[in-house]
Image 1: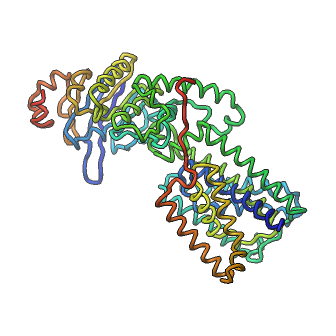
Image 2: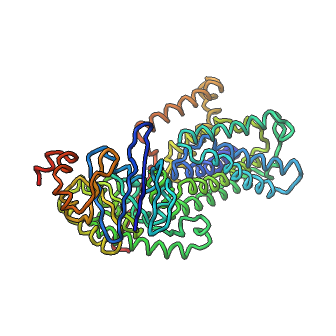
Image 3: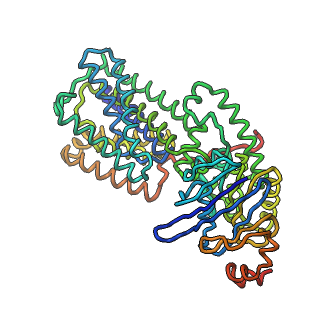
Length: 291
Length: 255
């Protein structure tokens, strides 16, 4: 039981970090990124590569943290001046290209067999790392969100033309936030690989991207507390599928599919009745006297 | 001096502007009038870099500025307010004004973590300036409201306050008085005069002829994408043919 709790907490922390990376891109900047699993996968493959070549662990972190933003820039360069809809398609496509390449070119990273990764000595260590990364990500995102940089990201989210007529290049800001966001997602991916101990292309399908989206939209894309709350709900639902299956005698497969159906229903309800998520963005109060 | 020469804009086969030229002197207000669809807003879009013209050039104080990029025009001090105010509606009124300030070290991620002090001190200056700009348009008491919750007239004033933050060299205003109550129009006129006296070049698109007559030094009349008359407000007003043909009879009866 205690192992299960530790596993749940670790997963919630890792996916929250991924959610925070999406919060920066989508919640603050309004970039519809349907390929957020790509930097996550790059981070994980970085860890696997380091293990495979007998390199120290930090090289895995470094590989992911450097490669993910680089790939992010490659993706955003053609997508930069595109409208939001195309951004969604380009990022979705990029993530799939990466996954299919890993799947079909076994020389790079084991193909469908996947790769094993050095695992932490105990699951408690993994949990400690995950929580530490989560705290750092939260502090970082808060700092960013409350800064003039975050303010301009929100302006770009609301109206790119307004930002341009104020002398800012929206693409420049979108590029910066993508680099930061993908770096964070890569760190989460590296940690994920070290916790799970094994990665394969099937760990990074489109479904993973949409599970992050589900959590972010449900909890509130523009608030960090919302992202974490959404992740808690979605991850607890995911990890408890097995228990629900046992308890209801419905069979694992069925319950797992029902879960996805329920996610879809909840998404529609959130869009209809609570577009800001469970914890929507609140505008800052200012005190005119404190100037 | 703002000098715009031979601007043509094509929307598909439709010529929205045909070789329009204008000159505006520092510390002056130039009125742009003409019927709907005559190309006034398109001309503002060209000057503000939002619209890339097919032909033409733009000079500010003798310096050529390449057209077609809004952020470049803004960086040269050419600032614009839109007919339907563009605001960050889910941000507060204060935040909307703060973003009007150029030179914000806090908009660079590296500065945020390596030079937090200079970010904070610049932010304090910006906030103080923002409150001042808000009081100039009588909106200081709304500072913490969401911008989207303001009335239409207040939103126009807010977009003016945003522009004030940048100390623009050229100010392009698209119907600032539409939907604003008469008391606030007075306030706007006062504000525009102050800006003009500070040396700003103001180009004003407006259907409120009283406002045009009141504050414009020169007026250009556009019709079907061409300049058909130019002169002082009095001479334009006296040109009955212009008034009747292009502003309609009702506008005359109001006078």
